[in-house]
Image (cartoon, rainbow over all chains, first blue to last red; front, side):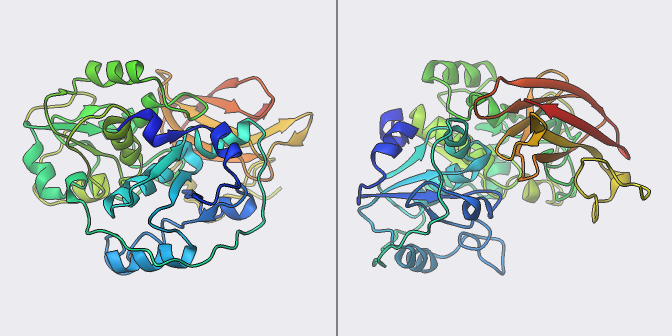
Length: 282
Length: 99
């Protein structure tokens, strides 16, 4: 992939507000953000209810995803443009999720909601009225989703990229600092994982850094471009942001997102864990 | 003022203050709350740790750790404002930021 195929600017979105082929979708960590104001015509997806199975810890099924997008008026041939708060964390998560279920044309709004707001661009509380569709999803593309056994097997053989903050990596914090400190049983990181906080890939306004800057960041952190890569964070949303950078912007092959991430790994019995700022040994 | 209440800050009801190192405050412009600002929490090395949008009252909150932190505030039509703050488990650090 490339920047042109996967990212759009705020100007592009403004020029395409009335384009019937384009569906804007807002996905936020704060699921009430959309209700306070959103880009004209945008629909909302709630990552806690729309995109998660409500009983077990997993995603909604292919059939549920089809029903969701059909009901919200998203068609298979639509260009889906995702944006959200938190520097597009959850929009990138939804991007990866749309790719997981085989949607062809998905893009991210560079900078997301923050860039839009800092530019003082218009937001509305008007709700869009979209006609239902007959959406057909594909089987999950497991080439972009990692499960725990693959992650354990990747220690010492593949690139593991821990995209959480340095304090979470070292085990000094268990969760992002805007959330109460809870969740996994143990703090720390997966042995051999490189620490590349997702935020290194973004400018202050939430837009992505240039390809050259991005390549340098991951190279310096020890990412071997000849190896397969698994990215993880706490629950798989910040690592979607890094997955997007490595796979979609830099065109790296075989990059997976480990959506179980630290809340799963840090609660597994018997797996190796490293504390402190160094990656540790396999 | 009741014990534990904080001037200008968000209610701490439901938060176990004894277990958290809380940094919170309010962003204002000419004394008025700024409800669409973004506050970033940077660690002692300047590394990004977290970011929150302010609410309608201009307020924000972080659950940090012991040590020195920098709050970087971005708001529409304003210069970036950096403020340093010390946080400690069991304490609430209140920061007033004007842009």
